[in-house]
Length: 139
Image 1: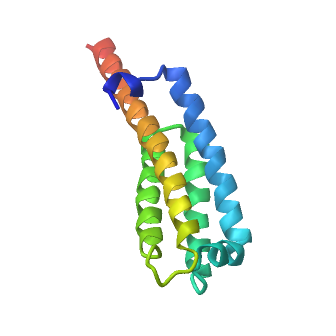
Image 2: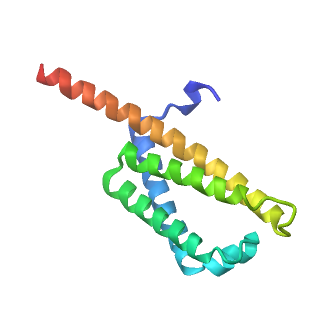
């Protein structure tokens, strides 16, 4: 991927951030409401409490993104993606009869992680430009 392919306008970046915020709320709600279905589909029975904690994290990220649209709030999703990928990776072993499902979810989380990272990087650049512009205006 080239740097140019990650460039978005400020309005595109903020629109993507809002979409990611809503996605976080929906995903978090699903993890809170249906942890047994999720763990059963992934061969992770016994991890329902962890899935619910991850759901709370998703909801917190979603609320933060929708209320602030800050780079920090979107970077929290990137950190959550890393945590999710690490947890899922531990369940990719041959002893898991649902490893195909886990691999599919890893691919999905990886794709969303790329969107999260692109959005967070773009918001960071926008915030840096805005701070630089504010500082110039004060001088």
